Each structure stands twice: as C-alpha cells, then as structure tokens.
Image 1: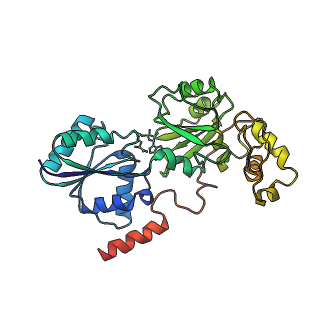
Image 2: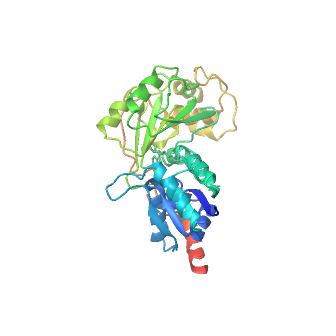
Image 3: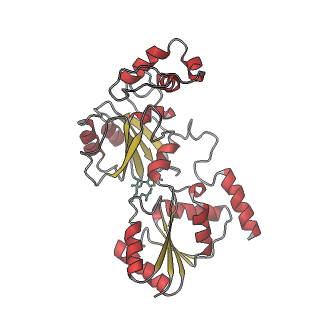
Length: 335
Ligand SMILES: C[S@@+](CC[C@H](N)C(=O)[O-])C[C@H]1O[C@@H](n2cnc3c(N)ncnc32)[C@H](O)[C@@H]1O
C-alpha cells in the first residue's frame, strides 16, 4: 500500500504557534483529520485570516452526537484515506507525541504500509504556562521540570518546589494530585497555578498553593482544558503578585536586597547567601530582587482573574500574532 500521513502538531490553539512546516503540510494536504482541542481553533483562525486551504476537513473531535471518534476508528480512517492515495494531515493539539497518541497512530499506519512523517508542535505543557508569565525553569528558582498526565501516579515525582511539575488533564483529579504533592517535600505552601483554555476565549489564571488550590478550583468552577503548574516558578507570574504568602526563601532574599531592591536588580549578578532548603545554593542579586518584588506577605491566598492583563496586555486573546499574520497575508496573496 502507498500513501502518506503527516502527523502535525497544531500547538495550543493559536495559529501563531503553528510551525511553518506544519502550515506547509496543511497547504499540501488533500484531507485534514482534525482534533477538537487546539487543531480546530487553528484552522478557524487561518480561515478568518483569509488563508484558503483546499483540503477537506474531517473533525474527529466529535460526532453529531457529541461523542469523540474512538481511537481505533481514527486509525482505520487514516489508513483508508492514505491508502486511497490522498495526502492526509492528521492535525493534533499541541505536540503529537506529548500525551497525544501520535505514536500509536504512526505505528498503526506503518503496519498497514502507509508512510508517516511527523511535524512536531508547540506543546501546551510549555506554552500555556507561558501565557501566564510562568517559565518552567528559571536560574536559581527551578532547574528541571516534569510533565505528567494526571492519570499517572504522581506520588513518586522527583524533587521539591524547585522542580516544576506540569499536570496535563489534571482538573478532575486536582484534589488528589495536590494532596499527594503536598505530603511530599513540596509541602502545602508550594505555589500552584491553573491556566484554563490558554490562548482561547476562556483563558483564566487561578493562583494558590498545594494546600488551597483544590478549594479554589472548586469555588471558581475551573474546567478543562487546563494546565496545572506546581513549583516556585509560579511566583514569577505577574498573576501571583500580592497573592501568594511570602516564602522563607523570598523573605531571606528580601532582607539581603533591601533597602534598594530595584537598583540592585540592575547591578551585575553577584552571589547572595540564601537560607532556604529549596534554594540552598548561591543566588544572583537579580533573582533575589525578583523574588523580593514578587513575594508579598499578605497572609492571604486568593484567586484572581487573568483578564489577559498584565500578561497579555496589548495582544489579542485569540488570533494570529501580527508577525505571522503579515506572513500569512503575504503567502496568501502570492500563492
Ligand atoms: C490529551 S492532552 C494533549 C496534549 C497535547 N498533545 C500537547 O502537547 O499539548 C490534553 C491536555 O492538554 C492540555 N491542554 C491542551 N491545550 C490546552 C490549552 N489551550 N489550554 C489549557 N490546557 C491545554 C490540557 O491539560 C488538556 O487536558
């Protein structure tokens, strides 16, 4: 059997985060088999930008009865379409190989004699925290991260609050996950952020701690899709400002950087002693000033609406970012 299936990562749902290679694959496709989460939003944004794709689009995110097409049926569909000689793009949310069942689809197609190419995508595990201003690593704060599905066992995860944990599909089991992580070295005060519908119309950020997050999420009726970030890096989010109680780490570095933290932040980095367990290593004055500014001891843990400010101020909640938009227009008019 001949035929080609290209597995394309659509990113988290913003066409600006589709790769150029992914876009070219979409242009060349005869048929696009699309997931609902991420993929459909990207196709809609491309269409709204006037970018015409000739391919037939098959939505496997839901059937008329609102049930998702079973994985076996998707596999069969890909083989059938490619076997008939059509150029098939399988458009999947985020990255196809991050909890995306991409490898299963690849193996099934190859076993049927169909060639498969893979175009990686921008995973929600990294990009959705970024909309809330959360880097998964930051020098002196976190040097490693783990991405885990909430369906998996999280009790044995490595590290403390300086090892960031990213939970996908984590809303339904949030209370269990938070409890399990809080009873480990991270403790109940470890910061947590939930970012719902990143890059979508329902984008919202909820900030709390492992001890409070389940209650906050219930009170705010947090829904899927959402990415949960656990660790000290959450303090770096503008959304956390004034929300999280000061950590021992932040208090220690605040003392060191007083009285003029702002000017210290501009000075060249120099080692500063820190007294915390999580950061038992020299810290730069820049990082110290950063924490001193972010960690305000309100004695209160509450939640805030993202409303896209201050993180997304001046940028559209959805749609293509100006640079890609311009690129797409050029492409659309020249092709
Ligand atoms: C089946 S996993 C697929 C992950 C995907 N392959 C990726 O790399 O992003 C689906 C989960 O990804 C996360 N997710 C994907 N897109 C998201 C978005 N735009 N906003 C928030 N969470 C998202 C949610 O945790 C959701 O439950």
